[in-house]
Length: 114
Image (cartoon, rainbow, N blue to C red; front, side, top):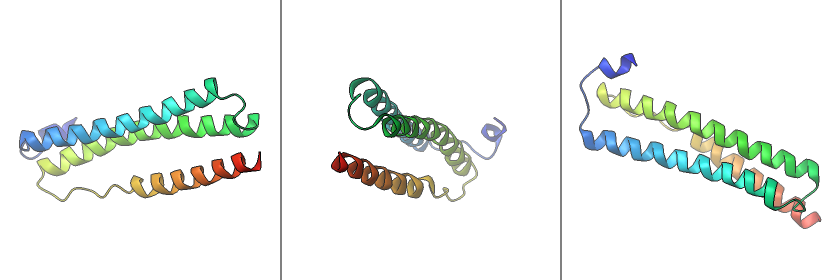
């Protein structure tokens, strides 16, 4: 945590806003994990076993990735605020949006085919 000694401490309001954003990412990851558990435990006849398992694994991996990304993003933003530099662009939003759109379309296609 060398970055905590760099630059000057930001205004506490900005640090708290950064923390709220971190918690929002964590809530999103928890929602993905809850969806994975729900599909696995509560919807055994939702789709063929292979597709259902693949969906549960994809949702679980997305939750894990979002949790990791939330921490990395929080650190990068804190470091940028301490050094008075521009905040980094959240490129993961592009991947998340594309992945969600693709996942929803695949799920709808499988459900319609049943």
